[in-house]
Image (cartoon, rainbow, N blue to C red; front, side):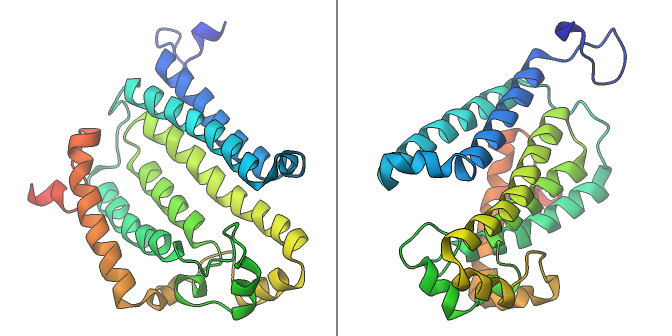
Length: 239
């Protein structure tokens, strides 16, 4: 029976209802994101750009809120953890994740649904797009991998896996959609960029990009304790 599902294989340890809710919410969040952005997009386009964005945002926000509520209700620290080495690796990964994410927030991002997307693709890559043509998604992926490495709790593992799937599969599907929508412009962009990150080129973000990411990293890891109840980043060691 559903109520007898277990995570550790022992009948005496049924799956927490909050974790079941988190799994369902994660499936909804990732599923709606991928389905509405790709196979259902032509049908939803009949609503017009404004109508599509309204429906899309309402559904995604609802699923995201569900995820957060279920996540906060789920048990914390119920796995063995990967120790201080895990925290070091996770903390290190979240810095380039922010470099990629913040660097993607530019009008020159061809992945964005903006009128200038085709022109941005034809202009050629710069900044973090020299690293990968999907810096935002790889930022999410690195964040997810960092939390999977921690092996801290089932809730962080479920959430991390969901975000990782959404980021990597979503960016792959975006390539297919953009080839169809933008044709030669996107093919030209693909020829000059890479799906898989070229980590040796992270310096292309420039000192401003790294400084902004470092400041954001310091703030976000500092608020991790009041928000999540667990010290993260450098604050885990200096208090």
